[in-house]
Image (cartoon, rainbow over all chains, first blue to last red; front, side, top):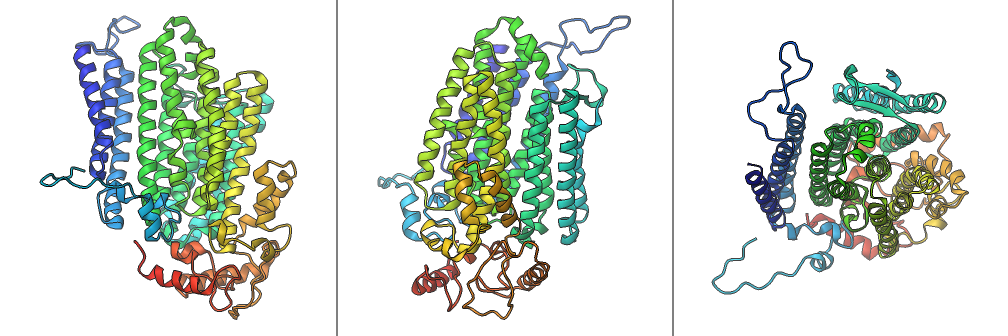
Length: 144
Length: 492
């Protein structure tokens, strides 16, 4: 079971990083949310997988009978989920505002901070900072 | 159980709550904001005196005994950092009275500022690694919103880069914490310190140490991981940049020092050599980057990076002298960087631009030892006299609008600016308030003239609106006209 989970977590991380390297802002955000999901699953896995053994102390004992399900990783995961959800909400609003201000989803259009003068960028400096786009082959759509 | 350890966390929290409760009344928000920052400073100094005389202070939150519960620990290093955070909080809170426009204040600037201070103080005072993660997230989310507050295009773009990279850092931190928990069974820093050597899992622990190094390295702007900083730190208003520069990277450095002196000391030859080499590269690359910049705040952003290299090199050396040098450097660095950014803000306001080629002639125009230009130089060089000039720079920076506003008649020819003059000037203060009120009513005013309040009020385009007919000698009139026209159909 550990192996299956490890493979799944690895695949999630790979997909998340692949998405974060895309040129579209929406895919970046999906990648980030997958990253947090993969991390939560990782915390779950390294916390130890036990079946049906709640961390409750039986009558007359001072400790739960080992092995028991560790309560700390689940609190770590819960906290991480909540924090991730808050940050994701912020990123969604930021993406909406970005689309309103920049006018496109394309991360290659967001190079004003690298231009010579962000507060009144002229065409030359922004053009200099924008990466060159390869010319499209005929009949092929350019995937962002 | 020492309540004083908890106060640096509860005071900014209460201040943030009270600023939220009065969110419609900006005057009340400002008063509460500055009063809260002053209260935080008082509490922090009390904590430092307590720790210096009585040793390490501990508070077990909820009275759960360690290692089962979360403990707040104040040793001398933590207490010093909390005092510095409070000092910078107070300085920037006063500075932001004049720098942050009413629109940003209306959207909760003061609340976010105090939540940032809350996260910083919490990170300095915690004794548990996962609690450190939580405080990091608190201060990170507050910084996200502060960076993007105002919604101008450079801010939004900088925010995307900043948010993405810092989220990756947080994720790496969480991964490292969870793997460390699975190895050691505890997350209490003191407990880990004695438990890790007994476990015999050297390889895994070193791997986790490197994960921590990357995660804290991203936050501390370490050598190959710092590129988010110059891309985003120069975009928000100067007060926000000042508090970021002073505090955020230093929390990362504090975390690095804490984990690599307390917890991960089994494989010093490997981990600390990496830190040493990376610190050296950070110093050099930061300095080279600063040399290549043409804008004040971008140059200073690279300076932050270079200084981080200095601070962490002491950690890499891992000797008592090296570590004490690192801590001393951090102390001076926090003060100097915050002051430098505030001075840069004053320069921007008085010079009209952040671009170095347009700031020519500023020294001739701004007379006197209290001027920002004469303070900025020695500060950046680390000159010993800088600490004396620091007070003057702080005074000049704290009252950026207090120019010699003798005449509200709006004569264009008057260029005399004497920032040190207005400090104790009650009349100047009254006129400044009048200037801000007329600013708030939307009257466009020219630069360098009485009613020209904080430039930040008018957004980015204002920086390039030079004074009218009596414009500055360094700006060509045609250039000025072109800029003014160009702003009308700006790129965004």
